[in-house]
Image 1 (cartoon, rainbow, N blue to C red):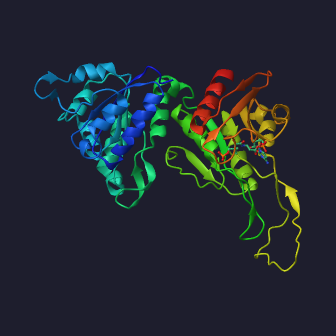
Image 2 (tube, rainbow, N blue to C red; image 1 turned 30 degrees about the vertical axis):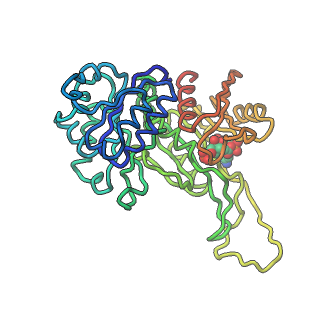
Image 3 (cartoon, rainbow, N blue to C red; image 1 turned 180 degrees about the vertical axis):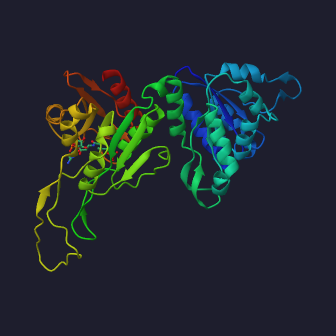
Length: 402
Ligand code: PMT
């Protein structure tokens, strides 16, 4: 989808500037045309030669080249389909917000008629400073696209928010922005209820029955729905995934299937679209021991009882509340037959099938391969893609089909 798109990348002074090389390489792989504008500070972190080689275009830094030719900032601003400023330092954020135009990058930014996205990168305390927060908020309010920083280890050794988003994330944002300036309106104010992650069913205070779900798939669906304008409520099981980027949605953290069931039940009345991607344990121990079970016997027997089927319950309440319902099916054999049967039994509008037979699909991977089945026997097959792209496919299908 980026094939032939003209992308203007502004790189500012931050240690994250090294990621600009990967970003340019990936954008080129996607078939985009890339031009790079560097600030003087950025040159301390990455060389113009690296970026001109990767972008196959001269890198621009100054208003003029050796006083001989003029780098026309207005033409550059008009050339681009999208302008990305990544990494965007605290200094450049402040200039963008006040219109200070003391370098070529700012001249291009002020002339740009295309969407502009910025990916901040800075140290923890700088990121948390109220002026930075105010500048970011003000730019977002003016319609610029924030590609929010991620949490993790920072160059200073501190741990927290401030790392520039990874190039793949920036590219996904880029696609969403270009993929339709109307994309955001697709689910404007639509209320989504999304379940994600595994559930843990306690055996005793230290042990549980669980499964391999990481929560990635559901988290990506929640993030993408949010980007498409939805109001999102995410019910998330015990997942260790990074939840940065989820700040703007309501999240209920749960552990067991029973807790997930209770969280979902109270929300159904106010739901427009439910997407249930959680891997819920079908059974739980009949009794949870109060104390750690000692290993006295050579064998023990755990008596299991059925958990509530949350999706089935939501299917039964559909007519009462009028929402649309999308379930998942994780299968290992007879995939299409089993998915079709779940679609009917649980009264779903669509079901997303992923099979453990497909390499790179299912649990814990950052990719998935899905088939979407509809009530009218329609079957849509998709290639192996990143879970972020899969989330987009699912939401676009929901928008198109129901
Ligand atoms: O979290 P990740 O590591 O990214 O992995 C993603 C995933 C593989 C977990 C996800 O893509 C997926 O397939 N989720 C559904 C897994 C599952 O439990 O499938 P199922 O076929 O057993 O269940 C069918 C549907 O009923 C699912 O929508 C499930 O959420 C729902 N269900 C199942 C049992 C139950 N007691 N309550 C439910 O709501």
